[in-house]
Length: 116
Image (tube, rainbow, N blue to C red; front, side, top):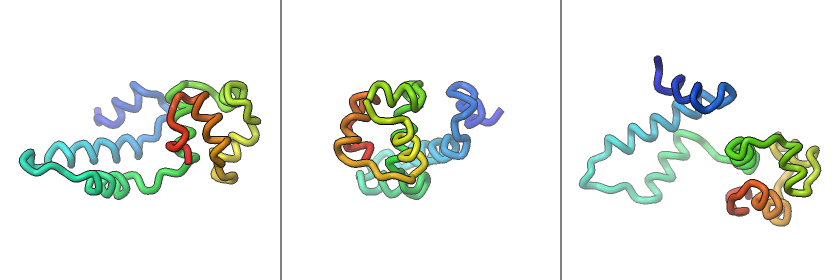
């Protein structure tokens, strides 16, 4: 069985298989780099961007919410932000302001800057 499929089964059937494959490809590339030559932070960021593309605030919020295994409704109750507002943010229809990011970050147990 494909490694990405095994990982997906372990995580959750809803987990994006393409994303898992991109992460595995990045891991393989980094693993195969010459040990004598460390990659710079800029090189790592470039590799991540090449594989994953831009990570939007919507992507980050969904990922942190998935990590905490909570629904939008539960996030709404924990953060004090309307569920509709969270839904619009996750669909990319609404921007995330600093105040909103701070409330979400407390509920999602992360740094608010990772949600902007």
